Amino acid sequence: MIIPKEPKLTDEQLSIVTSIVEEYDCKIQDIVGHHRTVYAVLGEERKTIMINRILGLDFIDRFDAVDSPFKLMDSSSELAQHKIVLGDHIVGKGPFVIAGHCTIDPKNPNLFIESAHAVKEAGAKAIRGGVWKPRTMPYSYQGDDASVKILMEARSQTDLPVDTEVMDEHQLRIAVEAGVDILQVGARNALNYSLLKSIGQMTQNKKIAVLLKRSMGMGPVNEFIAAAEYIAAAGNPDIMLCPRGTNPTMDSYRNYPDESITPLLKEKTWAPVIVDPSHSVGRAKYVPSAALAAIAYGADGVIIESHVDPQRGIGDDPKQSIKPDILKQLITDIEAIWTIKNRTVLI
Ligand code: PEP
Ligand code: MN
Image 1: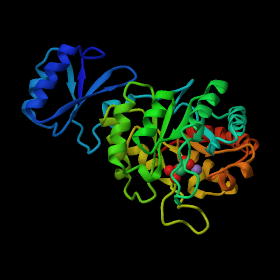
Image 2 (image 1 turned 90 degrees about the vertical axis):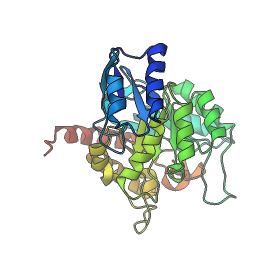
Image 3 (image 1 turned 135 degrees about the horizontal axis):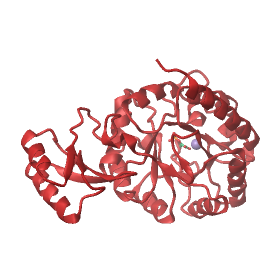
Image 4 (image 1 turned 135 degrees about the vertical axis):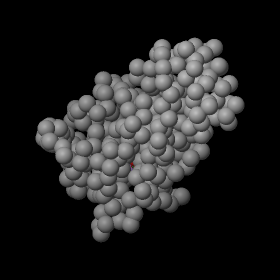
């Protein structure tokens, strides 16, 4: 990774650097960070002659060749200082709670708007609402482009950032154009590398964050971080990692709860971790304990399905959404655990 002396390279400086790396079959990807732009060298960057030629340029400060498969997402990367800002919240400073419906019902827009206000009142910092849904059965409700308007209406009424899942480029384009703040990559698409690349490219420099779920089949933690690296390498470092339970399931939980990988993720990568207890345990009554466990493990926040009237919801809402009054109590408890966690002396 190339770090310039000034906050960013001029066009002329960038073309000098680009033509050098291209001689060595590499490419440059600019990554706009909070304080400065850094330039990732995509390809085999550890070539001494190339590095020396770049270091010889008087506008270059450093060349960090990170000794890791994740040049950008590794904890030792220059991007480790990068901060994701959503609404008035800097992710990592205080618990970041995203809450709202699994699925927006376009036939009942007021239900979603009501839930959006209720989760804000409960203390959520962002609102989730599924516009398009990955359903196991092709006959189940699949989502509707029209729900984007309802999601954006909730955004303008509450002034909170909004999150929705995109599964293909059509949905991605609509969500980006509408101004969705957080694009969710679901568990089923966490290994869809072409989608990850398109998301990275289309959200670059747009202040759109990506919430990357852990795939239910993902094994090693490195596989998860590598998926995030795809998005960063395509231009957007605003990535939050989201463990959401894996397979095989544990007894009557929906998945095998995996909030315990949080410390491992936080050791290897600087990316914030936002755990999804709703999909991991899959039943409203188990969600609060799993959410508190996630914070105790050091998560930066949680994403929770919440609905004013779960039985009138669609998708996962009837079985796993918690009501806003429970969410409110949970957020108070999350803040208490957060305080305890952050005064714990780590060995
Ligand atoms: C969801 O968030 O509603 C969802 C479908 O999640 P996942 O991709 O984790 O199954
Ligand atoms: Mn859901």
